[in-house]
Image (tube, rainbow, N blue to C red; front, top):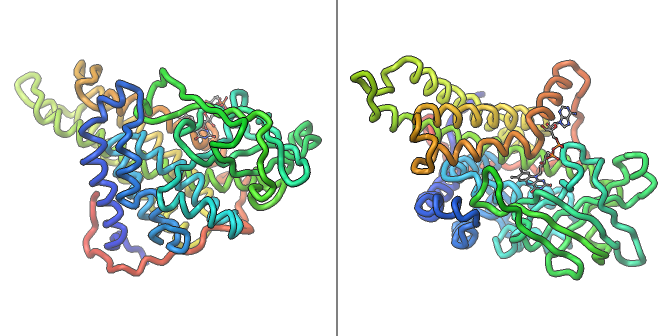
Length: 411
Ligand SMILES: Cc1cc2nc3c(=O)[nH]c(=O)nc-3n(C[C@H](O)[C@H](O)[C@H](O)COP(=O)(O)OP(=O)(O)OC[C@H]3O[C@@H](n4cnc5c(N)ncnc54)[C@H](O)[C@@H]3O)c2cc1C
C-alpha cells in the first residue's frame, strides 16, 4: 500500500516547528544573520515547543513521535533559516537518536533524558582540522588509565561548539590501529563541557549558517570516566556512521524547506516584477527556473519521506538516506542560485532573503557527507560494490497510530 497522507501527530509536529519559525526566527533572522550570532530566544522557544526531543521515546523524556515528523520539523525550520534546522541535526539526529540505540541504560538516563527534555543541548564532534570526509584521519586519542580515559585532541567545524553541554566525541583508543588506519581502533565517548581541559570557540566569517554557532573544541588531558565510553572500545566508527545516517536525514528534510522557501520567494517576486510590459513570471525562461524548483521540491521530499518511512519500520536506510541527502542538497543549491537569478540585482542584496538562502545552501553539500562522498556511495551501490546488511542495532520501529489526515498535503 502506498499512502501519501500524513497523520495528525506528524502535522502537529510540523505546526509546532512552523509556529517557532514564524514567531521566533523569521522576525529577527536578518539581524542575527548579519551579527553572526545565534538568537538567544531560539533554544528556549524550541524547548518550550517540545522540539528538542519529540522523536525520542517518552521513557527518555521525549514525545515518542515518529521519524517522518522529524523531517517535517526540519523542513519547517529550514524554511525560515538553515541555522535553526542545524540545531535539530546535531541535537536529535547526531546525538540523541544514536545514544538511544548505542547508549546503555545509565547513559540514557543521565544524558539522553535531559537532552530530549531540552534541559541540556548536545552536539557531535568527529571532524578535526586535518580530517573531515576521511574520518579515519582524525588524530584525537583517548588513552585508558584505570577507571578513566585521558582525552587529547581538537575538533573543528562543530555545530553548537560554544553552546552545547554534552559532546559526542570520537577518538582513537588503540594507538597501534591508529598507525594502520584501522577504524576498529576508534571509540565514542560522551564528554561534558564543564570538565577540566575542555575549551571551545566560535568560527566567524562563515559563508552561511551565520545565525548559527559553529566552532572548535579542544581537549587537553581531559579525564573521561570509563562509564562514558559508548557501547564498547572499537565501536566508534560504527557509531559515527550510524549518527551520520540520522544526521543526513535531517539535512535532507531541511533542504526540502530551503527549496520551498526559494520557490515561494521566487513565485511572489516574479509575479510582481515587470519587464517588457509583463510580469517576469510570464517569461518562459523564468518559468523554467520556477518549474525546476517545484520539481526539485517534490522529488527531494519524496526521497526524504521514503527514508523516514524505512526508519519508522526500524529498517536500515543508509542507501536511501544518502540518496535523499545528496539530491535534496543538490536541488537546494540549484533552487537558491535560481532564486537569486529571478530577483536580478535585488537578489544580490540582503534586502531580500534569497541572498541568505544562496549562502546557506552551500554548506549542506559539504557537511554530513560531501556531494562527492554521496556520489561515490551511490555509484558503489549501483555497481554492487556496496551492499548493506542489517545493523546489529538500529532504531526501534515507531508506529504512529494517530488518525490519518485524508488529503495529500502539499506542505
Ligand atoms: C556549517 C558546518 C557545520 C558542521 N558541523 C559539524 C559538526 O557538528 N560535527 C562534525 O563533526 N563536523 C561538522 N562539520 C564538518 C563537516 O562534516 C566536514 O566539513 C565534512 O565532513 C567535509 O570535510 P572537510 O571539510 O575536511 O573536507 P575534505 O574532507 O578535506 O574534502 C575537501 C573536498 O575534497 C572532496 N573529497 C574528499 N575526499 C574525496 C574523494 N575520495 N573523492 C572525491 N572527492 C573527495 C570533498 O568532497 C570536498 O569537496 C561542519 C561543517 C560545516 C561547514
